[in-house]
Length: 295
Image (cartoon, rainbow, N blue to C red; front, side, top):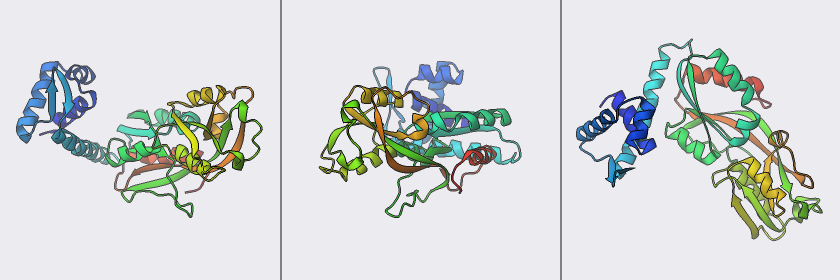
């Protein structure tokens, strides 16, 4: 079992296709198949279930993948540690959609200019999923909005560290049919367009609405995948949505829609407790220079 075999297994596990994995890795399919077979023989375990030429991870494969991600991440971290003053290698960064839209354009452009030897791997998801991926070493760091306790302190898992960056003013955008609403407490029913479960803003919106009028019992939630889709739902006349003011400033609000202040949330950068790399250190510095809250 070596680094190359682990990398091949990881890509096949992500693609669930030898053909796609071969294309992604620039290898012939027979080489990919042989490597996987050799790895299975070495481990004395079936990593994939092969059904009508389709692949899916076996229970043992899923378990081994979690270790593979950690080993590959640790190997990359070790390699980068040998060149502490020269950021290089891969940096897997995740982000909420809102931070990607309104906060990352400038610092990531500067990062690419000042760290040309770093390959930045970027993806967006809700906070809950990003936290899990950082913990599982699928991501090196991520911009999230950590849930808070009753005292307003971030609830950060023990195996992660965080750096507060942006204080976001949240807005509840209302459809034309709700233009008469002047305060949040007047809302006792309606529909909410939000990102999937795991999104902190969705959770905050539901908590807020459940404390109103009819305790939110008549609030229905529609999952969407983008802020443009959220506003389209609101413009259709039956949905509300919650988003940061910084995002709304980037979008054109359809005529007739109104909004109400709905509290604040802080965006943080998270990473694993013992993870260090020159690339991460440089990214943290760039993000801190744009932050509107102090660490």
